[in-house]
Image (cartoon, rainbow, N blue to C red; front, side):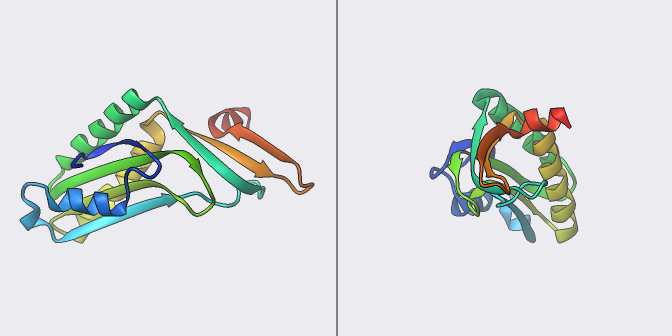
Length: 153
């Protein structure tokens, strides 16, 4: 499975796939660093509520296109050999991997700076949606789409 970006059902893509993809890239012999970001399901909201689980969904066709566009764009930067963004979909427990982002480049400075840009861009641009199931201080369970909650604040 050699693809540079996309959304995948939980369990169909993992960190080893990410590394294997990078090592298969043309010009991998020029790589001196691979920087990786792994986004995981956090157990607490910004308001301090306990997260019981997360559900990740996407407008899949568009998300695949946006993630690929970001990778293609960032791959044009000097010294960058490979950029990958793979977001997982489904139900997740606290601590589960949600997203893998990697940058393979000639030097570590390019890898780190492009990695940060890739993470910021996918968070802002990709139509991937998160629903949190939380338990408040009173022990009451509720769930909401995070984007909807952010609009209310």
